[in-house]
Image (cartoon, rainbow, N blue to C red):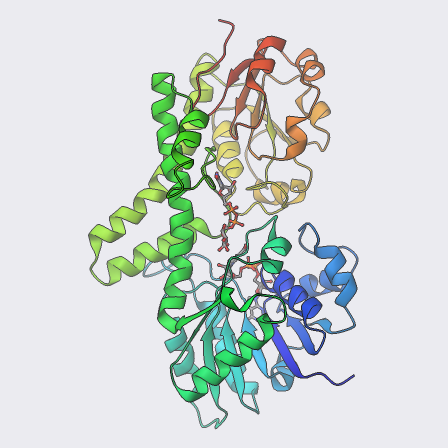
Length: 458
Ligand code: NAD
Ligand code: UGA
């Protein structure tokens, strides 16, 4: 079969894999290839056991793999053969040198740019899919045009807004697709080519365009705004716990104002995930770079409150359990940073687990999809940790349960049975407010929700 165009994606991760699978699914006329430097990851994408868990992903990969979706490690050959290259490599927080702990680590991204420059033999559209500091496209252009290579490259910014756990739904039905381009004739032509791909399934009015810098910045700001909502509601949980107000009632009352909106107001033990913290710190770093310290301080507060919330959770556990956790057995319900994913990057559960071990508690961790990643995250930790898939078995004999992830299964467990099997007094710390607290209290538990009055038998 001859394809209209060849699309390449460099980086077969949580974004590259699902995004390209969906483009292949919706656009059979394009050949879509995903490459990665990690041969193990590519082998998994070619197998029945995909490297990431995402509802609906298996079906889409099955329908397209071998038809117009391909996975490969032959990066150089694929660069040569492609017309449009999406770059979706990781851009973690830099952990060394200048900007350590704040700035984006652009080494993977820059290697990719150099590789494209070296192997491209015909004109290409380069699409930034990774989340990058504003003005990165300019650096990309400079690298691409810094040799004798006469090939023309047009760099576009097309940030990804999917959330894990709902990636396929978000990709199929995005609130918006954002494409940033140069206003030059070749920039606008490249933009139209990218619009043409998305127009196969996204209504035209939801495909918005801007200049490159607005597009790059919008992605950082979108994540900062989302995280800010969580820190806002989480900051108020602390006040609720002091005043007998109930965060669910407050969130409902505030969120029903249509100007505020009701989404993303779920109080929690803290936000996790690979992006919120890194993208806010990146934004903070950029602001400081431009001397905008007040702006930087403002956004840094979002991360500060998130750390405070996790600290508070541990302190609440300690004070509820008579100021000592040493030798107590605590079961963590969930380890992924949110439900419906096995991803544990920056999961609050990692922080909580480490702190509990510091307090000399014994841990039992249960999670339907994230136990393998949990084992990697806590590898080498100096303390007693076990990993048990069945929540009944996991909580048996424990002094306390701490809900870390809002997996639906946890709300529907037989808590009478669990209560019977636990040490007494039995405690539940609901870090996601997903359980029926009154009923748990009636069963006999001492219940500590987030931002709601505790229900105790003492
Ligand atoms: P990831 O770590 O899951 O995947 C990145 C992949 O790139 C890895 O498999 C890595 O091996 C590969 N890679 C690195 N350097 C490479 C190179 N030179 N050549 C080929 N492959 C290379 O990361 P991710 O979660 O998919 O995130 C990718 C980007 O998308 C980040 O910038 C992130 O901020 C952004 N983003 C992520 C999400 C999300 O939900 N995870 C959502 C929106 C945006
Ligand atoms: C987030 C954004 O929602 C995506 O739009 C963005 O593309 C992505 O980051 C990214 O750039 O990586 P994600 O981190 O996958 O997606 O998941 P979210 O649903 O945003 O949840 C992030 C964290 O906030 C989770 O730990 C979640 O449990 C927590 N959260 C979310 C709350 O504590 N309360 C809420 O009300 C919502």
